[in-house]
Length: 239
Image (cartoon, rainbow, N blue to C red; front, side, top):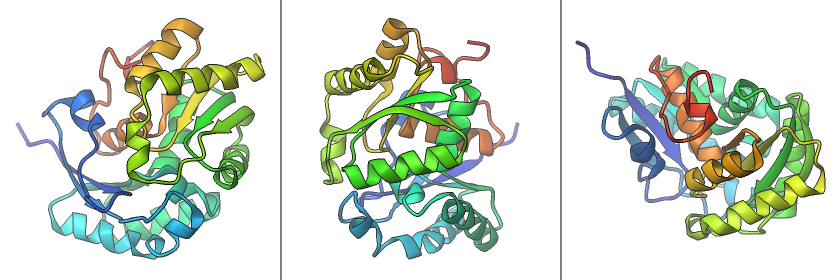
C-alpha cells in the first residue's frame, strides 16, 4: 500500500505551523507540512509585502516533500479579485509542477458542493475586505444576502475568537435576510468547526468556513477522500 501524499500548506502566520483543524479533521492519517507567509496584519497593507513570495513558498514546500500545495489564506487570496487568484494558482502550479489550490478556490468549491447560492457571511475582517469578499463571491456566481465582520486585523487575534461569538455573528447575518440558503464564516485563522456544527444543527442550513473548506479542498486535490464524519455536511458523504 502506497503512502498517502504529503500535503503542503502556506499559512498566513510567520510561525508556519499546521493549523489545528488538520488533526481534528484527519487525525494522523494524512501528513501535512507548512510554511508561514508572515503577514503583518489581515489587511491589504499587511498582504502587500508577502503576496509576491507565495510562489517561492510553494516551491520550498515541494522541495520539502509536498506533493500538493494550498495557499491557506482566504483574504490573502481573494483581495485582488478572481483573475488574480486564478493567476496565482496557475503560477504556483507552473513553478512547482504540482497540483495547487488556494483557500478562496476552496470556499467557492465548498459552497457549490453544499448547493449554496444565497449566502450569509460572517467574517473577522474590516469593511474594506468585506467589500472585496462580496465582489469576489458575486463574480463567482453567489449572492451575498448579508455580511458583517469583527474588524480584526491582528493575525494571532483570529484564533482567540470564541465559538459563541462566531455563532452569534452568523445568526445575526442570517436574521438580516432569511432568504439565505447557506452560511459562510470567512478567515482561515478562526476556529470554526464547533460553530459550524451548532449552526447546521440549530438553523438547518449548510455552513462552511475558510479553514475547514481549505482542508476539504486540498485533500480532494491530493486525490484522497476528504470526508470526516461528525464535522458537518461538507465532510459527510451523501449528507
